Amino acid sequence: MPEKISVLGAGSWGIAVANLLHTNGHSVSLWEFNRDDCNYLLNNRTHEKKLPGIEIPEKINITNDLSEAIDGAAYTVLAVPAQKVRAVCESIEKTIGIPGKYINLAKGVEIGSLRRMSEVIEETIKNTDKNCIATLSGPSHAEEVARGIPTSVVAASTNNDFAREIQEIFNNITFRVYRSSDLVGVELGGSLKNVIAIASGITQGLGFGDNTTGALLTRGLAEITRMGVKAGADPLTFAGLSGVGDLITTCVSRHSRNRHVGERIGKGETLTEILDSMVMVAEGVDTCRSAYAMSEKFGVDMPITCEVHKVLFEDKPPRQALTDLMGRTLKEEIWS
Image (cartoon, rainbow, N blue to C red; front, side, top):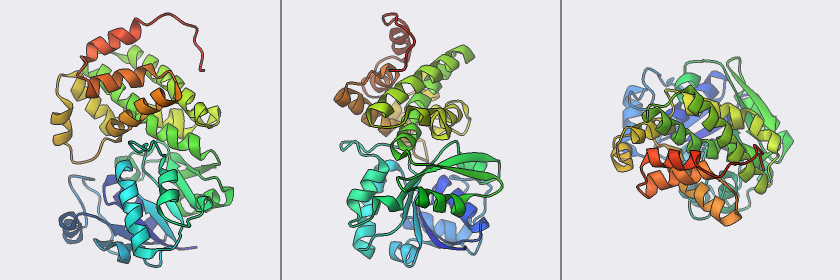
């Protein structure tokens, strides 16, 4: 059944998702916070810097007015960066003041509070039922989804019926949607893999090879799983689309902003120089702060994350970070 759906955030992923939902027959409003960017999208129906070559159909309503975007929407899709989710939810609360149905697309953990995005939504938009909050995650670069290149993702909610609703709304012949009740695991898998992707980029920037990448992804998955289990996730979730599926994609893809950041760091650029030159957000940079704080708070061994944190924020030379990782005390290969 066609629904009215609001997509908040007109970055590359927001545009791709708005187009996908429109293709599926839904009535879509696309909200852009920045007025100049909104006017650009209205005038051009495309954004060459964010998602080159992809047009936004005329029937998609593009607006800078949050009230207009969410008024009467059956579902609200949050396609803004993770560290902006709270501010957008506060604006939603002020604008409509009633609970709704929310689908989070952000992959990150809030700095300071260490909240997952579903937790931010639940505590910020008053009276919203946690059973009406879902996260959609998996290997889904906007550049490929927008062009109809096949992929599969997972819709996670504590309410299986709501996860099934999300499946039906998003699923099509090129975008297959599975469902999961492990909201904790799906959100942490999608978030923490971005830190490992930065590490993967660093090794590429340093000139290392496929063996290094394979080892890094495997041990990165081990520490993601350790943290997830500590937070109450099912370890098997990390063997799925939002775990190893998204991890592999983000660590090796030319579309990955997090891998891009790491590669440039490995080649000698500073984090400030890199971020200042980027149009889109690399979620892993902020998530690295949160992941490091989580490892300290909960006593979870996350050596790759800790070394990435030292490289990004403590000026540790990347090559020394890798040397220190390789030189740690020998141990049995276990996941706990």
